[in-house]
Length: 262
Image: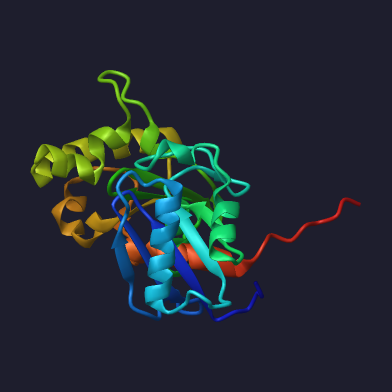
Protein backbone atom coordinates (compact mmCIF):
# COMPACT_ATOMS: atom_id res chain seq x y z
CA UNK A 1 0.00 0.00 0.00
CA UNK A 2 1.06 3.56 -0.62
CA UNK A 3 2.53 5.49 2.27
CA UNK A 4 0.87 8.83 2.87
CA UNK A 5 -2.71 7.47 2.69
CA UNK A 6 -5.26 9.31 4.80
CA UNK A 7 -7.44 6.30 5.62
CA UNK A 8 -6.99 2.58 6.26
CA UNK A 9 -9.08 -0.32 7.51
CA UNK A 10 -8.52 -2.05 10.84
CA UNK A 11 -9.89 -5.37 12.05
CA UNK A 12 -9.50 -6.53 15.65
CA UNK A 13 -10.08 -10.25 16.27
CA UNK A 14 -10.73 -11.11 19.91
CA UNK A 15 -11.76 -14.13 21.91
CA UNK A 16 -15.41 -13.00 22.03
CA UNK A 17 -15.82 -10.42 19.26
CA UNK A 18 -14.47 -9.34 15.87
CA UNK A 19 -14.55 -5.58 15.28
CA UNK A 20 -13.70 -3.44 12.24
CA UNK A 21 -13.71 0.18 11.17
CA UNK A 22 -12.22 2.74 8.80
CA UNK A 23 -9.53 4.83 10.45
CA UNK A 24 -8.63 8.46 9.82
CA UNK A 25 -4.84 8.15 9.96
CA UNK A 26 -4.18 11.85 10.49
CA UNK A 27 -6.44 12.13 13.53
CA UNK A 28 -5.97 8.56 14.75
CA UNK A 29 -9.67 7.82 15.22
CA UNK A 30 -12.50 5.97 13.52
CA UNK A 31 -14.07 7.73 10.55
CA UNK A 32 -16.83 5.11 10.25
CA UNK A 33 -19.12 3.14 12.50
CA UNK A 34 -17.46 0.29 14.37
CA UNK A 35 -18.85 -3.00 13.08
CA UNK A 36 -18.88 -5.99 15.42
CA UNK A 37 -19.82 -9.66 15.16
CA UNK A 38 -19.34 -12.43 17.69
CA UNK A 39 -16.23 -14.55 17.31
CA UNK A 40 -17.35 -17.96 15.95
CA UNK A 41 -17.46 -20.73 18.52
CA UNK A 42 -14.13 -22.53 18.52
CA UNK A 43 -12.49 -19.67 16.59
CA UNK A 44 -11.02 -21.91 13.89
CA UNK A 45 -9.29 -20.22 10.93
CA UNK A 46 -11.97 -20.78 8.25
CA UNK A 47 -14.77 -19.57 10.51
CA UNK A 48 -12.81 -16.51 11.63
CA UNK A 49 -11.97 -15.63 8.02
CA UNK A 50 -15.67 -15.82 7.12
CA UNK A 51 -16.54 -13.53 10.03
CA UNK A 52 -13.86 -11.02 8.96
CA UNK A 53 -15.27 -11.06 5.43
CA UNK A 54 -18.71 -10.38 6.92
CA UNK A 55 -17.58 -7.32 8.90
CA UNK A 56 -15.72 -5.92 5.88
CA UNK A 57 -18.77 -6.37 3.65
CA UNK A 58 -21.02 -4.77 6.28
CA UNK A 59 -18.59 -1.88 6.50
CA UNK A 60 -18.76 -1.56 2.71
CA UNK A 61 -15.03 -2.07 2.14
CA UNK A 62 -14.96 -5.67 0.92
CA UNK A 63 -13.48 -4.56 -2.41
CA UNK A 64 -11.64 -1.44 -1.18
CA UNK A 65 -8.00 -0.82 -2.04
CA UNK A 66 -7.32 0.88 1.31
CA UNK A 67 -4.60 -0.69 3.44
CA UNK A 68 -5.98 -3.40 5.73
CA UNK A 69 -4.51 -4.37 9.09
CA UNK A 70 -5.69 -7.33 11.15
CA UNK A 71 -4.99 -7.57 14.89
CA UNK A 72 -5.03 -11.04 16.44
CA UNK A 73 -4.53 -12.51 19.96
CA UNK A 74 -1.32 -14.43 19.28
CA UNK A 75 2.40 -14.07 18.88
CA UNK A 76 2.84 -12.97 15.25
CA UNK A 77 6.21 -13.29 13.46
CA UNK A 78 6.67 -13.11 9.71
CA UNK A 79 2.93 -13.41 9.19
CA UNK A 80 2.71 -16.65 11.18
CA UNK A 81 0.74 -17.04 14.41
CA UNK A 82 2.93 -18.91 16.88
CA UNK A 83 0.51 -19.17 19.78
CA UNK A 84 -3.24 -19.40 20.39
CA UNK A 85 -4.71 -17.59 23.39
CA UNK A 86 -8.50 -17.94 23.65
CA UNK A 87 -8.79 -19.21 20.05
CA UNK A 88 -8.43 -22.58 18.33
CA UNK A 89 -5.10 -24.39 18.68
CA UNK A 90 -5.10 -24.67 14.87
CA UNK A 91 -3.62 -21.15 14.84
CA UNK A 92 -0.35 -22.38 16.37
CA UNK A 93 2.46 -22.14 13.77
CA UNK A 94 -0.11 -21.17 11.13
CA UNK A 95 0.54 -19.01 8.04
CA UNK A 96 -2.21 -16.61 9.07
CA UNK A 97 -1.27 -13.64 6.94
CA UNK A 98 -1.09 -15.69 3.73
CA UNK A 99 -4.32 -17.51 4.64
CA UNK A 100 -6.15 -14.19 5.00
CA UNK A 101 -4.56 -12.70 1.90
CA UNK A 102 -5.63 -15.71 -0.16
CA UNK A 103 -9.09 -15.73 1.40
CA UNK A 104 -9.72 -11.99 0.98
CA UNK A 105 -7.87 -11.61 -2.32
CA UNK A 106 -5.76 -8.67 -1.12
CA UNK A 107 -2.65 -7.70 0.82
CA UNK A 108 -3.02 -7.37 4.58
CA UNK A 109 -0.81 -6.70 7.60
CA UNK A 110 -1.22 -9.22 10.44
CA UNK A 111 -0.17 -8.10 13.94
CA UNK A 112 -0.57 -9.04 17.60
CA UNK A 113 -3.70 -7.36 18.97
CA UNK A 114 -2.11 -5.76 22.04
CA UNK A 115 0.81 -4.49 19.95
CA UNK A 116 -1.72 -2.84 17.64
CA UNK A 117 -3.44 -1.22 20.64
CA UNK A 118 -0.08 0.01 21.89
CA UNK A 119 0.69 1.65 18.55
CA UNK A 120 -2.69 3.43 18.63
CA UNK A 121 -2.04 4.81 22.11
CA UNK A 122 1.55 5.89 21.48
CA UNK A 123 0.72 7.63 18.19
CA UNK A 124 -2.64 9.15 19.03
CA UNK A 125 -3.56 8.41 22.62
CA UNK A 126 -2.57 8.12 26.25
CA UNK A 127 1.14 7.50 25.57
CA UNK A 128 1.64 10.09 22.83
CA UNK A 129 4.97 11.86 23.41
CA UNK A 130 5.83 9.60 26.37
CA UNK A 131 9.57 9.02 26.82
CA UNK A 132 11.06 5.79 28.15
CA UNK A 133 9.14 2.55 28.55
CA UNK A 134 5.36 2.42 28.19
CA UNK A 135 3.59 -0.87 28.90
CA UNK A 136 0.04 -1.17 27.63
CA UNK A 137 -2.10 -4.00 28.91
CA UNK A 138 -5.47 -5.04 27.52
CA UNK A 139 -7.79 -6.52 30.13
CA UNK A 140 -10.48 -8.66 28.55
CA UNK A 141 -10.85 -12.36 27.79
CA UNK A 142 -7.12 -12.54 28.55
CA UNK A 143 -4.35 -10.05 29.27
CA UNK A 144 -2.47 -8.73 26.25
CA UNK A 145 0.55 -6.48 26.46
CA UNK A 146 2.57 -4.07 24.35
CA UNK A 147 5.97 -2.65 25.27
CA UNK A 148 6.98 0.62 23.62
CA UNK A 149 10.32 2.32 24.28
CA UNK A 150 10.71 5.92 23.12
CA UNK A 151 7.94 5.34 20.60
CA UNK A 152 9.40 2.09 19.19
CA UNK A 153 7.40 -1.12 19.58
CA UNK A 154 9.07 -4.18 21.11
CA UNK A 155 6.69 -6.81 19.69
CA UNK A 156 5.14 -9.96 21.15
CA UNK A 157 5.84 -9.35 24.83
CA UNK A 158 2.99 -11.64 26.10
CA UNK A 159 3.13 -10.35 29.68
CA UNK A 160 -0.28 -11.84 30.37
CA UNK A 161 1.41 -15.22 30.63
CA UNK A 162 3.83 -14.50 33.46
CA UNK A 163 3.48 -17.36 35.93
CA UNK A 164 2.13 -17.25 39.46
CA UNK A 165 4.85 -19.29 41.14
CA UNK A 166 3.15 -19.74 44.53
CA UNK A 167 -0.32 -20.59 43.26
CA UNK A 168 0.16 -21.97 39.75
CA UNK A 169 -1.35 -20.80 36.49
CA UNK A 170 -0.63 -17.59 34.64
CA UNK A 171 -1.58 -13.97 35.17
CA UNK A 172 -4.47 -13.84 32.73
CA UNK A 173 -6.27 -16.85 34.20
CA UNK A 174 -6.12 -15.06 37.57
CA UNK A 175 -6.47 -11.36 36.77
CA UNK A 176 -8.09 -10.85 33.35
CA UNK A 177 -11.46 -9.11 33.28
CA UNK A 178 -12.97 -12.47 32.33
CA UNK A 179 -11.81 -13.85 35.72
CA UNK A 180 -13.86 -11.18 37.50
CA UNK A 181 -16.92 -12.10 35.45
CA UNK A 182 -16.36 -15.85 35.73
CA UNK A 183 -15.83 -15.83 39.50
CA UNK A 184 -18.32 -13.01 40.17
CA UNK A 185 -15.70 -10.93 41.96
CA UNK A 186 -16.37 -7.45 43.27
CA UNK A 187 -14.37 -4.57 41.80
CA UNK A 188 -12.37 -4.45 45.02
CA UNK A 189 -11.55 -8.16 45.02
CA UNK A 190 -10.57 -8.06 41.36
CA UNK A 191 -8.39 -5.01 41.90
CA UNK A 192 -6.44 -6.94 44.55
CA UNK A 193 -5.51 -9.38 41.80
CA UNK A 194 -4.55 -6.50 39.50
CA UNK A 195 -2.40 -5.10 42.31
CA UNK A 196 -0.39 -8.31 42.36
CA UNK A 197 -0.07 -8.28 38.58
CA UNK A 198 0.96 -4.67 38.06
CA UNK A 199 3.32 -4.69 41.06
CA UNK A 200 5.06 -7.73 39.60
CA UNK A 201 5.36 -6.21 36.11
CA UNK A 202 6.55 -2.95 37.67
CA UNK A 203 9.28 -4.83 39.57
CA UNK A 204 10.43 -6.68 36.43
CA UNK A 205 10.56 -3.72 34.02
CA UNK A 206 10.44 -0.40 35.91
CA UNK A 207 8.20 1.22 33.28
CA UNK A 208 7.56 4.94 32.98
CA UNK A 209 3.84 4.56 32.21
CA UNK A 210 1.14 1.89 32.31
CA UNK A 211 -1.80 2.24 29.90
CA UNK A 212 -4.87 0.05 30.48
CA UNK A 213 -6.93 -0.91 27.45
CA UNK A 214 -9.68 -3.39 26.64
CA UNK A 215 -13.39 -3.11 27.31
CA UNK A 216 -12.90 -2.53 31.04
CA UNK A 217 -11.07 0.73 30.30
CA UNK A 218 -14.57 2.25 29.93
CA UNK A 219 -14.79 2.09 33.74
CA UNK A 220 -11.39 3.33 35.00
CA UNK A 221 -12.92 4.94 38.09
CA UNK A 222 -13.93 1.49 39.37
CA UNK A 223 -10.41 0.15 39.80
CA UNK A 224 -7.50 2.41 38.81
CA UNK A 225 -7.74 4.64 41.94
CA UNK A 226 -7.46 1.50 44.11
CA UNK A 227 -4.05 0.51 42.70
CA UNK A 228 -0.94 1.54 44.63
CA UNK A 229 1.99 1.76 42.22
CA UNK A 230 5.06 3.92 41.70
CA UNK A 231 4.34 4.01 37.97
CA UNK A 232 1.56 6.26 36.65
CA UNK A 233 -1.33 4.18 35.31
CA UNK A 234 -3.96 5.64 32.96
CA UNK A 235 -6.82 4.32 30.79
CA UNK A 236 -6.38 4.00 27.04
CA UNK A 237 -7.83 6.96 25.15
CA UNK A 238 -9.22 4.77 22.37
CA UNK A 239 -10.51 2.09 24.73
CA UNK A 240 -11.88 -0.88 22.81
CA UNK A 241 -11.07 0.67 19.40
CA UNK A 242 -7.30 0.76 19.98
CA UNK A 243 -6.69 -2.52 18.16
CA UNK A 244 -8.58 -1.35 15.08
CA UNK A 245 -6.73 1.98 14.98
CA UNK A 246 -3.29 0.46 15.54
CA UNK A 247 -3.75 -2.33 12.99
CA UNK A 248 -4.85 0.19 10.37
CA UNK A 249 -1.92 2.48 11.19
CA UNK A 250 0.63 -0.31 10.85
CA UNK A 251 -0.91 -1.50 7.58
CA UNK A 252 -0.72 2.03 6.17
CA UNK A 253 2.98 2.22 7.12
CA UNK A 254 3.69 -0.45 4.54
CA UNK A 255 6.62 -2.88 4.81
CA UNK A 256 9.69 -1.55 6.63
CA UNK A 257 12.44 -0.11 4.45
CA UNK A 258 15.33 -2.49 3.79
CA UNK A 259 18.75 -0.95 4.29
CA UNK A 260 21.41 -2.53 2.08
CA UNK A 261 24.67 -3.56 3.72
CA UNK A 262 27.60 -1.37 2.80
